[in-house]
Amino acid sequence: MIVVILAQRYKLIKHIEIMAINKLLCNLSFIFLISFHFHFGLGEIRLNYYSESCPNAEEIVKEEVIRLYHKHGNTAVSWIRTLFHDCMVKSCDASILLESINGIQSEKISTRNMGMRNFKYINTIKDALERSCPMTVSCADVVALSARDGVVLLGGPHIEMKTGRKDSKESHLAEIDGFLPNHNDSIMFVLSRFQSVGIDVEGTVALLGAHSVGRVHCANIVDRLYPTVDPTLDANYAEYLKGRCPHPQPDPKAVEYARNDLKTPMTLDNNYYKNIMNNKGLLLVDQQLVSSPVTSSFVENMAADNDYFHEQFSKALLTLSENNPLSEADGEVRRDCRFVNSD
Ligand code: HEM
Ligand SMILES: [Ca+2]
Ligand SMILES: [Ca+2]
Image (cartoon, rainbow, N blue to C red):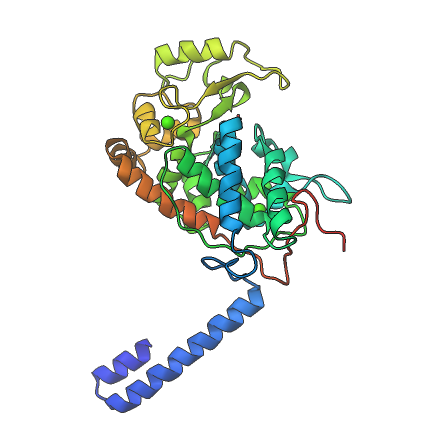
């Protein structure tokens, strides 16, 4: 393209020829894109993928998510984290839902996935879909759509999401640590992980706003409380947290945790940013968003404007939800989200 522009500048070729060359370049890049698509086996996702095969698919998911939310409010919280932990690890391919069986080692046993809950209710949603449209809607789409509907129930924005993802035939347990950041990783490392899936600094700051809902187990906090209190933590808040987490080495079986956001624990709002600006972030990664000059101005803007937070959150969650969908050849539609199809 640059060669064409330069040649045109020096009047080496006529307008008509330029048109022809441009067309040729266009065709070539189209062919390149097609072969890239084919070669790397990227799956096709689009809006209303199930409009013919299962027209009520999105409605069924929504109904189930609402029903479950009224029974167990925290299911809505879980769906958001499940999308993050599935999509970030290689692909939105429902790999996280596989159980350990027949040589598969479940991703659920990774320490990065500690505290994840409500997986059994994914099956409730999938069962409802199977009753209307057997073997049609993928578990990866259930993960994406349930997160979308969960966000709305928690007072967040409505996000238009594509469908048509396929489910993996394997677990990626061994690779999790390379994809999912840890709660005490440096901010630069965290940003680079998000960058690798196409999410910029602003998007990363917005996505961490998901910590405006839900809980954190004491195991992920105690390093900031014992033997001495992290000086970046508000002193009164640290005392409160010590009450919630009285043991420096919490019993992994004990259900000891603190809520992410005391003021609006079940609302996906910008209170998270107000908390971290007041040194009341739970995880080191939350605190670092304010202390790092790379991210702090976004934190301030999101703390000041809930609509701006929602806008950026929608955009980044959408990007995350479209990470690396599997092609028909590489994936399948699982009958039961916990197991690869046996046939
Ligand atoms: C650097 C990135 C992140 C790290 C290190 C991180 C880490 C964690 C940790 C350690 C917990 C507490 C788990 C527990 O003890 O039960 C947690 C909770 C949670 N995270 Fe993140 N997270 C990150 C980003 C995200 C993103 C991008 C989302 C979604 C968009 C998300 C959604 C959630 C939710 C909803 C909870 C509450 C879960 C519940 O109450 O069941 N997190 N996160
Ligand atoms: Ca995955
Ligand atoms: Ca909140």
